[in-house]
Image (cartoon, rainbow, N blue to C red; front, side, top):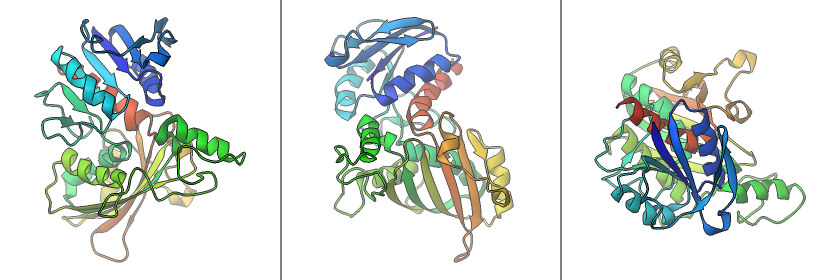
Length: 327
């Protein structure tokens, strides 16, 4: 039995964490739901009981809690995760606050395992998670030489504000979350622009991929991250080069047996991964696997995943499941 807390319980990801934890086989002895003062008193159903949301404060972790799943933004995580850790709580944080800290594990359960040298564990960026799930077994089999990502990211990745901008845009209402309309449009802009011309989101994918897969600087990685008018589930085109020579058939064979992957690759029957098929499941759909005709040992792989489930909530719960299973 384990006692859980969910911080940011009323947000888009927080509510999905509650849902995903309820689906899990984890034996949850007690669940605390925490959020800001404006959500205090709200009741949320978990399994067969209703739980009242309480305010997150510096005393929230004085009680007996084994795991705290955080999805309340970076500043909240920086303030409260160390308090929870000091009280013996294993924190699984969905923000970007801790991801590149060298002391903090950055975990995708299909790819790597937590060391628990620190009790704060970081959940990677949603697009990174779904990309490294198929890349891990391919790297083990053939060795990665170069990766170029192009993402097609759904508005749910921006929370309620992004969803509202898309839905309201259909009625001609000006956007509030994005700098331009997302309805009937595409924005090559996710997060802030940096001095090197990349966005912060793009550099997250570069740096997090290296950390999760333990890649050295000899493996070149680049990314272009794009917001598209899709409600849920991100798509990523992975342009990859391998060190060892391989074939499309061998890549498919590896991915058929890869944990967390469903191969959907039968273009003759118009079968390939799409957001509408990925929404609501934890697996990463992978297909459109083809050799790059312009260079040797280059391949293209298309992957799609539910960014709120596997890209956030489910990955966090899977980390807790992995730790509990190892006891």
